[in-house]
Length: 362
Image (cartoon, rainbow, N blue to C red; front, side, top):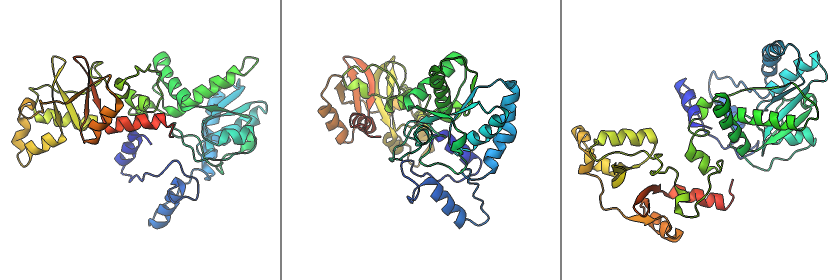
């Protein structure tokens, strides 16, 4: 789940419990089982259970569907939606098929979810996989999903979904979320299979504001292999944010320790490069800050150049990965250079991401 969604819920006063997304029903960390347990143990609580609550499809049957039908003036051949709880698909289909029995209800499903197989093959098996798209896709068939009302399904990969939501922003000015990327991509893929023109509708069902740290973060997309950046075949491929491309947060020698602290917090990093006229002159990290402001708030006004580390151990971009591993295993951050050009930092997490990609671990 994106950090933005968690902060939104916490801002509303909710206590958020993080569970696993790669386990099936019956596992102690399965999200619905955790929710039921919390509801049973919390006095005065109510388990809304959108997966089987009949109010869910009813809301779409009586409000969402009539609105779409009116705006389309009844001229609609197919509707593409995703399945999370199943309420949207079922509610829409109940209304639309009463109006036009030939109208087709299509499910756009993330790769790894079992819904598409259930629709197109009549059987499914959940293998413990997970997907990066949030809000849709399932490891079971919800009570609220009436498969008899679904005519077809299209599988969409994470990469396809995230590419489409970027395309929506660049070409249509729509800041949408990952579910929308799946739906729009699914609608396009389904239309491409047709042999005659069709009027097809889908949703912009979530906002990109809830995914800024994921779908619109270059480093997150790179970590999850959702970009087409050409690799250079050296250690530069491991850098999440390039200093030479202006992607890295930095400070200047004359900035204060408070400035360094604020930028570390805002960027969720533990060390910053100190740059002067785009040249690396030092590094400051959390430990440097702690040792210098301990029990004396006035020291936050000290300049960074008074405490920054100047004696820097660097590594060349064309060095062997074993040399990088040695630096990281000693508890240091790797400072990468290409000749005299500072490229950025490589941390332990960056190298782990590399191994995760090489080993194809999902």
